[in-house]
Image 1 (cartoon, rainbow, N blue to C red):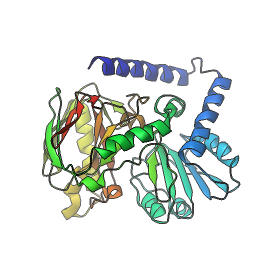
Image 2: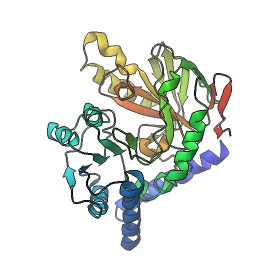
Image 3: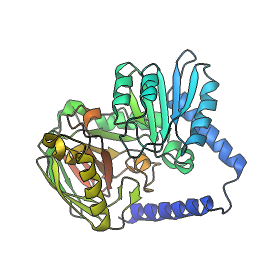
Length: 359
């Protein structure tokens, strides 16, 4: 795990440095930061979203991400006069629905860009807007560091080419086996037509939804087919893990989580989410909802799901709501765990070997 461990260590140091800056220590030169903000915002609206002057565009932000939302708004306003900047209250967790008025506005746009503290990706609001033809970029948990460094500095045109190339190898392959030196040993099936190759940073078609920074290939595990053990040893949601998390999976559902205080917190969080569901649906909160692997060579493992799940050489699993991927587990909660240096087999093909993407 040498090189990736060094990256994690550097990322944790960066994180501590950022925290100390927030506490009043010297900050990045204001002019330099403004230039980086403008450059990234320009990339979002011109390269990633390819905005047109006639398009209705909505930028959704909250008190935690207002500076980034403002930067995107300013760059978007140079392209179109049909741009709205909306600040909504911060939600409480990923997958929470935005206020009804926000949802209604989303449905009336051609372009929606959402730098918010918690993710709007797996929400009915996003699904409805997508069905109306909006193309949507969500930036959940975005910070100034993530917006101006790391994965956002990738060459997205080149990244799209690489994802397309790898994606061509996924056709007609159904059986996945993941192992790792940390102890992962799990198998499951996928529907080969459901691989998502659009998370490449270029969001220029109606009804396209992407995260920024981008750079992953993902799909939904076939219902009831996953069995085995998953050891998540990189990050969980927005936390770098000091102790691995071990998930036991039976017929596509988590049956136990082990790994100290973080495992206890996960169990409490998902149990609370299940209390809002009908009795017959309570177990669905433990659905293994998503599987993907990172493709962005600039992304860093920093303890933020937005960037963590894009790190090249890692894979990730999402747990909870899978409706955004066409599933039936409509449970209102979705969290992600990142696995370091996996070996991934797709039928007879080895896709990753101990974290190395095979050409």
